[in-house]
Image (cartoon, rainbow, N blue to C red; front, side, top):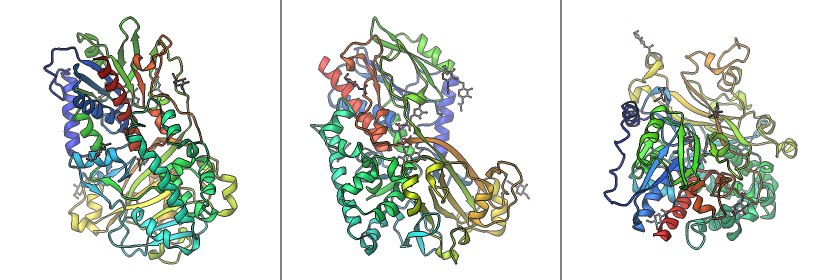
Length: 559
Ligand SMILES: Cc1cc2nc3c(=O)[nH]c(=O)nc-3n(C[C@H](O)[C@H](O)[C@H](O)COP(=O)(O)OP(=O)(O)OC[C@H]3O[C@@H](n4cnc5c(N)ncnc54)[C@H](O)[C@@H]3O)c2cc1C
Ligand SMILES: *[C@@H]1O[C@H](CO)[C@@H](O)[C@H](O)[C@H]1NC(C)=O
Ligand SMILES: *[C@@H]1O[C@H](CO)[C@@H](O)[C@H](O)[C@H]1NC(C)=O
Ligand SMILES: *[C@@H]1O[C@H](CO)[C@@H](O)[C@H](O)[C@H]1NC(C)=O
Ligand SMILES: *[C@@H]1O[C@H](CO)[C@@H](O)[C@H](O)[C@H]1NC(C)=O
Ligand SMILES: *[C@@H]1O[C@H](CO)[C@@H](O)[C@H](O)[C@H]1NC(C)=O
């Protein structure tokens, strides 16, 4: 984690231990009217944007009751699935462990990056030196596509320019781009009147016509747009696999086109989580990290909610404060993982949906990707980053399957060379490798691999071509020599849903069995239905901005 952030965290934990909740993030309003108290459960992109826009909208409408926003998160950090770890434990090398990329048309993230003075970086990958290719697509047998290394372009921004020119695919790249632009155009209507704010995802999806894309598979949408099978399988499927761990038969048409809307790809230098940390700290009255909300109890007489958490200090605080009840609760995390019980219980709890189990392996090594692993002749021929797809013979059979059954002979979704770390120019490395690295001053390559199962020592020794004999039965990476894998961080995420075709979406409002028909008035909101539509940092933030608007508009109309 970022040093400044660790400092924040320590001071926060200190304040919890000192039971000093009275120290708010923002000075309490001097207004005499009773504040409207809002609990935001989850400080990922969705919850952070909820807090940020609640404050923004409340100010712009000059609500006569001030808002008091309390943000809760299980984690000890802000950002949810957007977080960094330091390669080699060195704070100079923060590395995205979860969400890493957004694009210029992502208005919320783009604006926030600008408004908070964060530094956007377009250079997301760094090609290994003397590598001819920065990106390759491998079908488990051979490379079906490679793009040459160019100076100062990331593999993503260069993608279209190269793809467009390829005679191999005829008009398919242009047709894909046209279909993508059209879908993106409809999606952008979500930000403005008359679509915004939308009472439900359902209504917005219907009124913009995007239901035509969400209700069919990627394969179907591409067929209908006249995109050829070869381009779909070799290029677009490589993108749906790296972005959503899915083949074209297992992902809906809109999410497929989202994977191709990559113009202006960027990331925040030092970590995208900084956007969300700024959003929360600039807007919330109170931030309660390391605090899992376990119960939401409705006082049916007053229509308010009491929260219980796993954190005894927080419970004591919530229980003793004069007016501890919340007027509004926003659940900004997938219901099925939040493990919250509602009393009275929910009349229509969000349905459980399958999520992808994604294994992310970050590591550093002095070794380069092995040409022989990929059946190539020289080191220079191995692309720095490798996406994967299925070869023609398997595509039909595996296209709609999941996880290890869908990945095919490549065995992984993607490998990226993120950075080349030079001890000579950067000084010594921190952490356990310092002695080894400085001694022979070898560069360290920082890799990220996405796979549907944990990687084994045998896989990695083949990939990087170093000697290895599997000792332990399950052959874990952690048993490899520090000489070959100088730093390792493995993480299993419920990364995003399997984006199956669908035409109905969860509502933004939750209703307890005691609730009436005027569900918005009940004061329970839910963001994560948005993930079945599109799962990105931006769309979760958009759900948060939308719910913030619904809440503020309702308060405004009451006053
Ligand atoms: C490896 C990986 C790569 C990705 N790549 C990209 C990408 O390149 N670009 C992109 O835009 N998106 C990407 N995503 C998807 C993106 O991370 C998610 O869409 C986004 O984080 C969803 O935001 P959210 O706020 O809805 O949920 P989350 O980020 O999951 O936040 C929910 C928060 O709620 C907290 N919480 C849950 N239950 C409770 C409880 N009971 N009490 C208190 N707190 C609770 C959780 O701890 C969590 O912090 C990626 C995801 C992964 C895992
Ligand atoms: C982003 O900023 C632009 C220009 O300042 C503004 O017009 C637009 O409304 C902003 N959008 C969002 C979602 O904040
Ligand atoms: C989180 O809270 C628990 C108590 O609920 C405490 O034991 C633990 O040390 C805390 N962790 C951090 C990192 O603050
Ligand atoms: C869910 O919550 C219940 C009750 O609070 C608890 O006993 C259980 O361990 C939790 N399950 C998970 C997976 O966190
Ligand atoms: C590095 O070497 C020094 C002296 O040889 C030793 O004291 C130290 O423990 C080593 N550090 C690590 C992290 O191995
Ligand atoms: C969403 O709310 C509307 C109106 O209350 C209701 O008719 C519909 O069934 C709800 N949808 C879901 C998926 O719960």
